[in-house]
Length: 246
Image 1 (cartoon, rainbow, N blue to C red):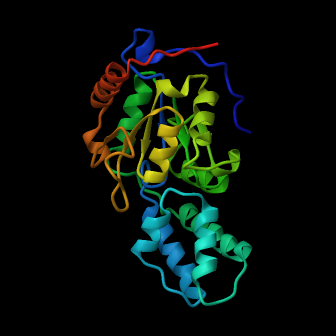
Image 2 (image 1 turned 60 degrees about the horizontal axis):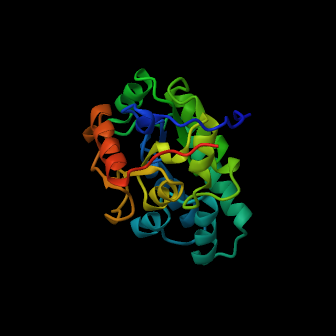
């Protein structure tokens, strides 16, 4: 059961601190290197239905909800198949691989997450993946660094809608606009920015247009806590944001 939302508290740079109120992390492609696993499973499912799957298909759907992938596959394969069958095959394939040890950290991800936690900054995992997949990843990488999680099952509207990041901030008891979001996809960065967060893009599959996020880096190895705080402080200075609570 997920934690109950807490009343929002004005924190971070807006209340005289340099740190953001919280850092909200995407999962697939940002913290863990699972986009290639998704590609393998998608290829397997599509080929079993007589179709072909390529990098362009993956790039089109990266960061989005599972249902978008299901609809795309069901609509493009030559075999008549229900969405429920496609969904079941995708979920079973992903969970099987994740439970089988196909989870590895993205470069710099564990180090940044550890540094953020050591600094006492609240953090949450905000993913479009189903809860069963989130749990499989957490079982592999450990749960201590990510005490709060949001999955695709926990929201009515998935990314690029702002609801996932608004919920993540709410569960931590902070104002969304006081948070930094780290995302590897345009869909996710759009979600974070729409929630009012400071969005930093770290592309994993394909490219992300420069205007989708507030800032973009090539890898999390280029983003330690000091650099994150520097970018956050610049954002606060440029926008003149002051949290309004109550």
